Amino acid sequence: MSNINNQICDVIIIGAGASGLFAAAAADLHAKGAVSYGEGSSFKGLILEKTSRPGTKLLMSGSGQCNITHAGSIKDFTSCYGDKGNKIRSCLYKYSNLSLMEFLEDNGVEVFTREDGKVFPKSMDAHDVLYMLLRRAKKNGFELKCDSEVTEINNIDTDNGPSLWQVVTTDSKGDITVYSAHSVIIATGGCSYPTTGSDGSFFNVLRNDLDIEITELKPSLTPIQVNEYPYAELSGISFESIHTSIWYKDKKIAETCEDLLFTHKDMSGPAVINISKYAQHGGKLRINYLHPLNYEQVLERLKKVFHGAKGSPANIIAAEFDLPKRFCQLFTERHGEGLKNLARNLTGEEFVINSVSGFNKAMATSGGIDLKQVSTSTFEFKEHPGLYAIGEALDVDGITGGYNLQFAYSSAASAIKTIFQNHQL
Image (tube, rainbow, N blue to C red):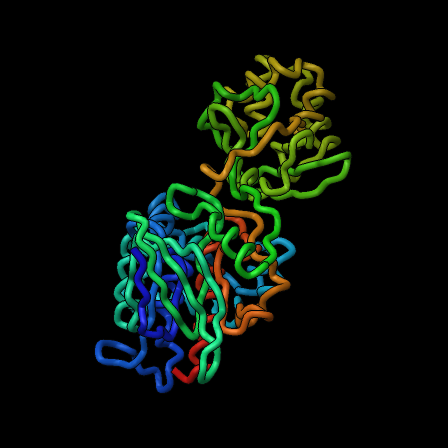
């Protein structure tokens, strides 16, 4: 069965994840005179969600506690998005972490900053953020329609006035509904956690209907599997401020210094997942467990501490460098008692990369809508006026710590501001 919705929407948002809900919730911040569009207003907004409920992935963020952003200077944020950081600088500066925290607080979600700089709702419950966004979206005149997968999107000419965007949806029964709007915001996410609805299928719609270029899609923020992984029995052991780097053909392509975690089958923790998008089969993962010490410094200390010392090498190393005893025991079993070999591997143990965990475990997606096709101050497509893309649907991904939700907010606020200004809503 097909249904044509004859009422023209002002704005259609495709996707009720974090970025889509941020756009709907922040809409009236940019209305003339800061007037809220509530019941009885002429504004009509629509949010189309593929799944049966909104915000599923948002509820998973921060293990359900919702690490919403990061504290500190917004100037430090750009480096957290790799080579895309400078391209999105203007939207981050304009709609910063302080702006996001103020937005949350003004709407009844108190936040606090943890010692590591991560910002959470005081309740440590992502539901509070989701419910607030849904309330704001409804107050701003947005209707939410779940179980509405967008299968087509086209620009159509009208007899009078500017062209309209036509959006076709299909529900679980196979019924088709056609909507039209002056502006459309793509907020469909990437490919990570596909069971939440963020499965990347909408990228095919954009390619087929609008010839939009999508960069290579890869898992990001995910554990790394190495050949002959030796630390399965140490699952749960973690290290602070460990230097890790990824090498390919003897060239270092990524590095970081953060916490490392051994799991029962792979390397994890921020020290690994924050550079995982650079991992490729056959490359090498190198770990310095004693950063900032180097090989020569560690060798010198080993010579001194081993001279005349009693006890097992594992216990001596554990005491000297404050390392877990179980790790040192297995480490010395693997590498022997030669001081040069121990120093070399303590400051640069090397593993051959087999693979990274897939999108089922990845917290983010590397790749998406190519940024060259949009204005990074408004997120409107250069060749498709009235069409916008925000959040993880774009080829932008940050490290862990709240940076991806921050970009979801910053890009959403930038897009909705432009729409309200262009159409004087």
